[in-house]
Length: 525
Image (cartoon, rainbow, N blue to C red; front, side, top):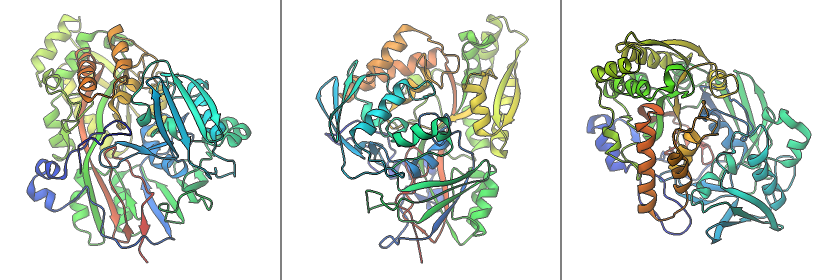
């Protein structure tokens, strides 16, 4: 893997080199894995149906209205993006469009010719303008924060869109590689309205043919797909299996071909099977407790700081993740180019300090905290560990568990049902995106819609202004410090990607986001 930055098209991502990854994992363990590797293969074979065990039902199959990070693995099959990212570095590269900045507050997108949505609608400049305006302005859009720097979008040619910015935004190419850059058919949205959530129409390699809630999702090849260098399988069948162990067993048994985001505790089962391969590597996937800063005791920064001091992150990685991964002291791992080691020192495990802060805040006897969690065994286990650690300083967690889509919607949506949520931040191609989406005042993932300081708001904008890496790193370091000094989140641990495929699966490539893409996957005869 490369962790460097190429000149020209955009912003860097973050990556741990293969050598660093091997060292981190340890020689004995790493030798048993296939770190960051593409499986040996010949020329890709077209045909066949890839069968995938997926652990979560989507919140929506419309990229603008969904609210769960686990949606991406489905969305990427249906939708292409204006910009793509390199699997290993997350560096932006041309997708459906190329881009340039004639001046710091103007972006010009040139769309590739001949792109058709699944319903036959052309993906031209009008369609791109429709999508960008919808993302910025639609009442139901959850990606408004992504496009907050956009002032106007104009069609300036049949395949050209000019985006005027309120301020310079060097993160915009990376943003357009995520949900904001997933193009939906304007015709389909016009016909279906809110039903587009369940019947999404894009221009990706495959088109949606069926979604049975909490059971399955099916996509088949888009025959008029504009590229011929990807999208090799005829279709993909997703089986929703919330228990990761069940998903793994389905691959070992030959019922499915691939299971992803597996917990390390299942490695012994993987090792006993001769018919599967384990692929792993570093990710930005951060296990954390989201905090609603507008509710009860959590409105007091001393309480939030106490909770951060109460967490033994090293013990969590050892027990909950079998030693795989990395303790999280902020929303970026130590391998990331914008990581600040000084911020990482803010919250060593110190239960006595936690108790003192709680007493100072008026909670000498502790308090109850309502918290959302998920029903799968690994989520329950993580919740139990955190309940034990926080309970030792007097923070008593009262869990409500459900599916990822249900609990996430109840926490982040209008209901605001819980004080906190045990979940994950699944990472974004640029760190400015992550910080904006989680901590911006009106951001969907800031459940309390709290602005902790005007400086943070200013830095969120500033983090996207410059293309100079030294300048960006300094701004992001200040952002990280404010977020953690204000204890806006309780980061716990970064996952290692663990994906298992049957040996008939060729071309699967892990990525730093830690969520599967299937564009280069093929099946052996």
